[in-house]
Amino acid sequence: MLERLQHHTLVRHLLVTLAGAAGIVAVTFALSPYRNYQLATVAAYLCATAGLTVLVGLSGQLSLGHGALMATGAYAYALAATELGDRGTTGPLLLVVPMIAAVLASGVIGGIIGLAGARLHGPYLAGLTLTLTIVVPAITTTFSGKLGGDQGLSVLVEPAPVGLGINFPLERWQAWIACGAALLTMFLLANLASSRLGREMRAVRDDEVAARLAGIDVGRTKVIVFVASAAAAGLGGGVLAVLTQSVSPGAFSLSFSLFLLMAVVVGGVGHLAGAVWGALILVALPELTASLADAIGSSPKLAERLDGNLPLLVFGLVLILVTIVFPRGLQGLLTSLTHRSTPSRQPTTTPTSSEFIDA
Image (cartoon, rainbow, N blue to C red):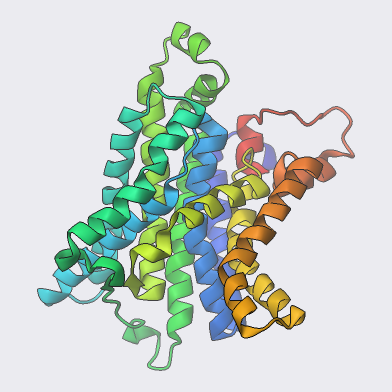
């Protein structure tokens, strides 16, 4: 049975997704409202880190603008929800339609960036995506009447369905929404990585000249993976809009995009599961640094300075440490420990398809 599942990746990924959904639902009943909100935030970040992991690890493209792509999704969700609310729309459509709008808006922006950057590599592509972090705040300022400027927009979010009970906690409902989006993202990206297109992406990443000689359309492949990654980030932005119930450009700054990329590197760019570690770090780091600042017992003035800089400092130190000690990230370390008992399987620098998905 297990051998048969190994050859049917779609069925295997579906079973893992369903098992994960069942486990998450059970866990949310045991968590406090605050922990459920944290779990939902992890899931929102996971959509973006998973897409970025595929972009960097599977196709070898570098993006410094995924925070702006999340902002695009968040604003698209807010605008669509407001429009539907003004028309009197209620129920599931008020959640599903804006979420689709968030995915489509970010996917379109990703397609435009992908087309422009299809012939760029390394720092040149990174510089192109970096402009997104400048353009998005500028657009919100230029069209402040529609997008709210620096103050942003409020997001129309309905409470949990009445069928779940009058006293059903909002945080648990948010966790279900966010985790459902994250599981869907992981399911789709895992199948993408194991498909023919995924193999073409790895071929382009390893050697573009050889890929062209093999008949692969390099430009098309790069655009497709960028669209998929951007759409995942847009979904994460839409989920984050549901959680915070507000959208502002300050929440998606350049430092946030850098945090996303660093989280992916720390988690392990060669493994889709590394995106989970990266998302956990993004949520856990601010809380840990706040506890560290309290332990230091600094003055209010110093605490105000540390509030924005301490997380970046700690994250930078963690990144340096992991890069030196565990160059393949946390998930790469776990994979190496798991396979250490099998001498025939030596860890490689470039992950195979199964290693990228299942590790």
